[in-house]
Amino acid sequence: MPKVIDHDERREHIVDVTWDLIVRGGFEAATMREIAAAAGFANGALKRYFPGKDALVEATFDRALSTVHAQIAAATADRKGLEALRVLCYGAMPLDAKRITAGRVLLAFWDMSLGNQRLHDRYAEHLRTWRAALREHIRQGRADGDIRTATPDEQLVDEIVLLSAGANVMSLVGPRFSTRKLQKAHLDSFFERLVRP
Image 1 (cartoon, one colour):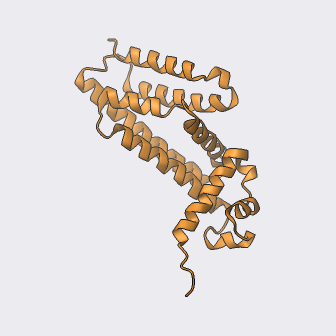
Image 2 (cartoon, helix red, strand yellow):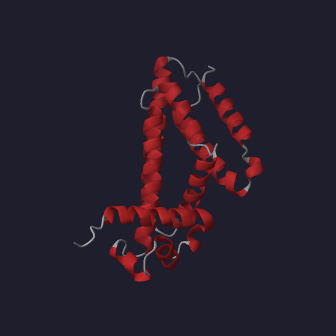
Image 3 (cartoon, rainbow, N blue to C red):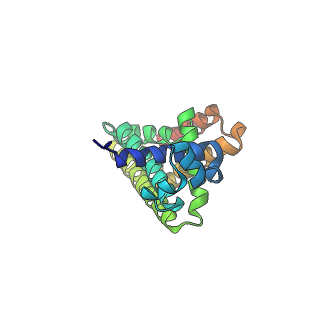
């Protein structure tokens, strides 16, 4: 009886291997040859699952973004307003090894998206979703009376996005300027401003 092959499982395994190679050495390290070798395939065998590197990178990018969306949904499921905003903001910061690794992968994707319109569009959609969630939590916080700052909502959303993106980049390229202590201090200062009229 021939062995039953789970093609979805194999695709996931190939994406896992690609993720690991990107984390260790960036996109340059994730050549089709290296991916095939690390996944235990002959070089040409990957084409059955991914027609080329761009398709494989997009699948890996999708994994990264879906992981982020799942974490956000789980973290804010029973929360709203200021509490949900706080959880969302702290969750987006590179405050542990897992999130620093995710930031390393996202940094590589950001770079690649400059020359890949499909990746650029996917990240732009992620940003729209994230910004909409931030905007809604701020609106709820104001309605509850917990957020009292006169700073416009859109400016607050911009500050959060820039703080998070900057912290993720600096945790990789200048970690002494983005220590966990500094990140928490900046977030604490931001939230202190939110509750002051």
